[in-house]
Image 1 (cartoon, rainbow, N blue to C red):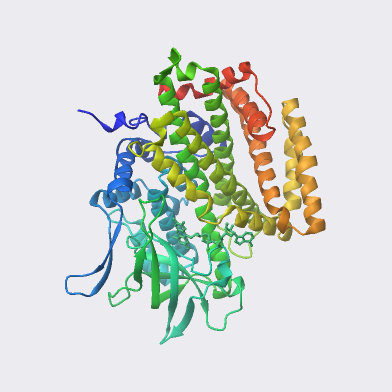
Image 2: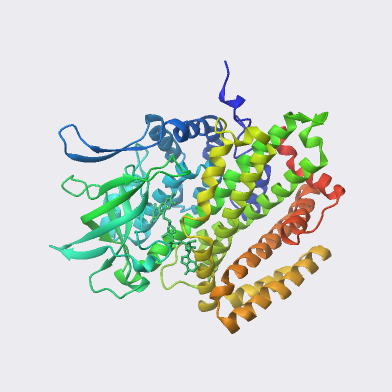
Length: 548
Ligand SMILES: Cc1cc2nc3c(=O)[nH]c(=O)nc-3n(C[C@H](O)[C@H](O)[C@H](O)COP(=O)(O)OP(=O)(O)OC[C@H]3O[C@@H](n4cnc5c(N)ncnc54)[C@H](O)[C@@H]3O)c2cc1C
């Protein structure tokens, strides 16, 4: 019998335990996995990949607007396998373990890297966001009533985030959805233009402006609303589902709120902070899961290259092909480590409420940097991995095309690169985190052991980062914010990666971590050539792909 592994070579590999760099990074940041993550790594590779590929091609969610007697039902139909896959994933604890007594958000973030499918994981992200906001900002009565539904084993509730409107996406403060107190309860009226997981979601976080609220972002309040009213009737109408280039494993629709029943999350005046805090979770998810897509693409290309022959030998025996793989691996690792550092920083600050301390703002700063860089890394690595598989990479018959299509949204949703830049400028200059970061960067660079790396990063810090900060202060931050975001991304990622490599080389006695870190510095940061010796040494860091 021909099986799926004929189409997808990494089928059967454990996406958690076999991924050696991931294991080393998790140990480095002090995260302990468990048997469920182990089982998840196997489940995704053996069952979920094939199911999500099938949904994407042949079983996309469909809106059934009307019931048999002509009444409006707003039923978003997904295949039975789709639903079962989601429940299987929830049963690995990808939401519940992050919210139960230990409150380990890092567990959820790591699961994103393993699952990575942008549509499927979108369902998990919006559910995590909804349950997190309910647990942290819902009053006791609301929490007691609804949180158990999200944590239960049997068919747990799913969530959604309704922020974007026709005239308000990046500009969250210009929403037109109105919240009004009517007969003792809040009711929302408005149209939400992008609503992922609609139809599957039992509840959502919704942004709206109370009548007579302040204008702009300050007037935004954040609410929890269930898909059904207390009397069982629908709390919102699904107007249509979007036709998308990717993420077809999650329905995304337009929703009309007609006096939808809702409950405030936190103080009304703090709504924008709640909305942004919850968005930060999605941004970290987006970084890590986007890199999960890149990992799968790279894994696949490397396996293809180890089997396919051209010019008399296997592709990976050609120096140029190996160099491609090594450069991609170094970018993936440097980005993944930085995303995990951001995830841990957010996890550690997650008990804070507005007004937040410097630790929370620092985590947010890292999130803007990594959201932007990881998204572009995901897009570029999945595209180049296609090329490394030649014509096969371009065919929709194989899952690689879906992986690249899915990666494209990672730069757009949860805020585009310009939005990350502007948010970074806000936290850097207005929350005073810039000074703290500058001090920390200076100290960390000086502590590096490798002189060449230390000097290169020090030069970059002085001539690129410090100089753009000076210009931004003199001319205003907006125009320079993206340059700052990108330079900080390169500097922070190479700094953390080098520190990790020095530590890992000591721990394992192997040379590849230092070699890969140097390849990253040369090829991604300094745009310099690399020697054949360095490529060979760094190439040892890929051996787990072929051995696992
Ligand atoms: C598949 C998919 C699923 C989604 N799911 C959801 C969901 O579940 N819930 C939800 O609320 N939203 C969702 N969204 C919406 C998404 O978050 C927004 O599309 C995104 O935030 C961008 O907003 P926008 O589309 O209004 O673009 P716009 O705000 O119109 O931006 C257009 C362009 O202008 C740029 N721009 C905007 N302002 C500035 C500025 N001040 N300076 C410089 N450049 C600027 C942006 O960077 C962007 O490139 C989804 C989107 C997609 C594609």
